[in-house]
Amino acid sequence: MSTTERKRRPSGRITLNEVAQAAGVSPITASRALRGERGVAAELVARVQLAAKELGYVPDPAARALASQRSAQVPVLVPLLSNALFVDVLEAVHSTLQPHGFQTLIGVTHYDPEQEEQLLKTYLAHRPAGLLLTGFDRTEAARQLVAKSGVPCVHLMELTQASGVYCVGFSQHDAGHDLTEHLVQRGRRRIAFVAAQLDPRTMQRAEGYRACLRAHKLYDPRLELLSPQPSSIRLGGELLEDLLRTRPDVDAVFFCNDDLAQGGLLAALRLGIEVPGRTAMAGFNDLSGSDQMVPPLTTVRTPRSAIGTASAQMLLSLMRGEKPSNNSVDLGFELTVRGST
Image 1 (tube, one colour):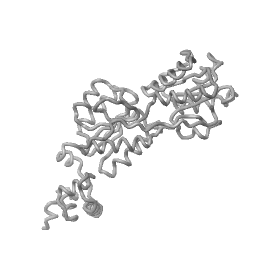
Image 2: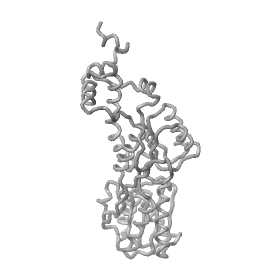
Image 3: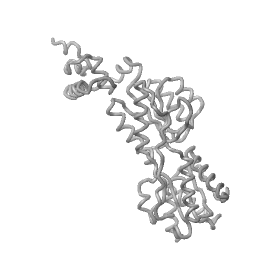
Image 4: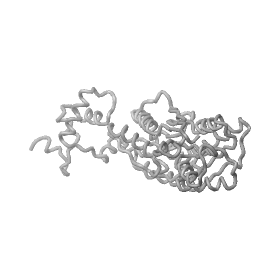
């Protein structure tokens, strides 16, 4: 019986020792090479990866967790999967982590801090390699769970300068301010803010809207229409109709996202309301289809894929025990002006 056959597990599964033997390296070097750790020569990494591919080696996550006291799993907690915003982020995270041997686990919180807390309890029990969390709105218990776990964590979509907190995103407040400023500069004076879901990032945009209008002495709280319902194209149309019934003199509408704005544009078309002649309309996030609306929708383009990539790269550094040079990475946003304003 050969050495390889003696070392193979009873299950018949290819072991790390077999990969190391085929590549002519030690099992420790093979393990480090497959995990993407720095300090392993590129030539050795290539040999190990080739041996693993030829042998059909599949890492045993349970064995890896026992050996390293960490699994190869990285939970990513997002509010929704029905929103293209978070799908783009997840695609970029997966594409960045997967070549380094890490598997993304998707948790959906539905904008509910209690649900997020339960998900964190479940995932942290399995000793994940790292965590990616959306924003900073969570229960104190959840905060303590993350802090005491010792698991590297990066926050997405929002920014803070708090010590020891790592994050990648942009200023929701500034984006809301700049879009409102654009409407003011276009001569609009009765600018409404229409929002749904009312999650923390939406309300940060609302604060930017308010700050801009207060600076111009144009703020009127009666022009805010805030609904706790889930955002949708249908709801956008309904909210526009509600707004115009009570505030027919509105000359611009800042919808908190493109779902609502697309619904508002469709309702305006159906009702014969000229856009932007009578009422300008703008959205947020530049989702698919916004550039095809009639007229094309002015919006804020957010760097969703870039946030996913940069946050995953930051997490990789933290999981290697390295300290990123900047704990708060601001990727900015882009005001995208089209025909609706």
